[in-house]
Image 1: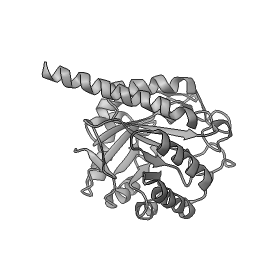
Image 2: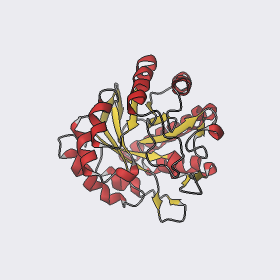
Image 3: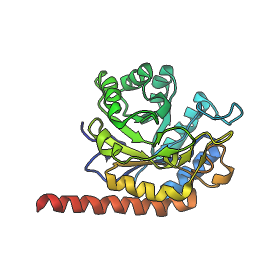
Length: 276
């Protein structure tokens, strides 16, 4: 599969490291504006801005879910126009696909829905790039079936993301073989730094181990990930979702610049090795 072009930026196996960035959930338009504005001002490379209008998969019935699809897409449309960035959000139902495609540059399918055929086909039929997170219960080679569902519509713009594998007991295991394995079936591979650091379902909300997120991100880049997914918040401790794994906004540029440079270094080494 060929590389993907989104708002004049190419993503894929021979391209610079790409980023999908933003808060977990849309707490308010002011928050989206603050985060996207800071990223736009402080990052020297393009990025795709992400925020969820509905967090349908939450541990507790009392958890904050977001403003809903209508208001959420209005927020994203304004962000796209104000900051001239590519945008994405996650969809949960087949009927969400065509509505979200009117606003979004990419459609994201959450991990727990990665096998939902009707959702995948509806998303693919929009002919937008489709970003699917590998389910925590799936082997990376199983993503070839996801790719076939999407490409059955004629859409071969596919991004696959690893977000760790669950064996229960409130933990995730990261197997970086998944990056090259999934890479055989998609245009670009991505690694979810945020959710791979989670400790799912601890009490009424998921916990996390933020201290491991940077080394995990470096390992993913070394394994060949073409993109990284990172949720960021100006005050993670007060975030309404994923407070233990959202990266502090003020520290985000330093981390991303380091990871971007690592990808550049590895690509140069690979190029030199091919010439020898």
